Amino acid sequence: MSDLRPRSIVVFLPNWVGDVVMATPTLRALRMSFPDARITYFGRAIALDTLSGSEWCDDVISATTKAPSRTLGQLQLIGSLRRGRFDLAVLMTNSFRTAFLAKLAGIGRIAGYDRDARSFFLTDRIMPPRDDSGQLVPVSAIDYYADLAGVLGVEVSCRQMHLPVTEACEEEADELFRQAGVDSRRPVVMLNPGASGGTSKIWGPDRFAQTADILVETRGAQIIINAAPGEKRIAADVAGRMVNPPVINFAERDNTLGLLKSMLRRTDVLVTNDTGARHIAAAIGSAVVTVFGSTDPLWAKINYARERIVSVEVDCGPCGRKLCDQIPGPKYHQCMHNMTAEMVVDAVEQLLDESLEESA
Image (cartoon, rainbow, N blue to C red; front, top):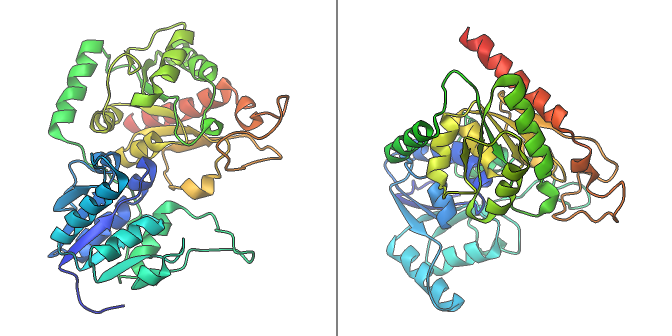
């Protein structure tokens, strides 16, 4: 490892929202460790949107191009990186492609995990944790990125996730709550029924609807249904099954990551599948109930005191598969089917009661 302090750093951000949020302790530590360096974030639009309003970087480069071909797009990205004259690239991504991009951009130091056949491109490398058979060992992404920073002599002493919000999104959330007639004396519960990465992560729309109706009846909860652009159908399905209509339903209107962050600041409890909204809620400070099915919680461990994880033990899980490979029958998707609305309601009520005790 070189002892020269970098003057210009480009950080290749993770591709998924949840991973970006779990990278924030390391992003904060990089800023604190190199206060005089110019730090640029390179990533997909969704990753950059997740960090909108951040004071930890000086510039951003979008990895999303409108080039008519993949080759031309890659050339454009290489050109953007070359113009940055970076002397250090920090690869939070694991792909061969991003390491190759950094090398072609002429970046002298490239730090990353030694995996996916990219060792040749790395100057500052770390081996990922593996077991005796060579398989990757489940480890929280928070620790995974922090260990990478350690290769550069950066200590991530605080592992708490954090996300900024913008004034414009705060004003938009306030106005949306006002228009919906949200009563500040009653709890606000947000449902996040969608998820990327396959149906094995998705709890049934009927269960989300049952959970919402129980909380409306027992706690006077005001329900918000969140939906990413590609999740409006499942959000509409949940709303259609509810006896008590939601006060805000993003199946019927557009949402943004910036607005979601501000909405979660005003939400008492989020009920969600294992997806990016879970991590955003924890970074913002909202209580969260996460239903886990096929995913091993160790990969996404966040050590957040205001989270309750609901799951059921099954012989075939956690399998990590996008689609359940059991034949139709009692074992099919049992990790989710065996999870009842009452189990989730109990977790929500625990968090609501704790909030009342803290405010008393």
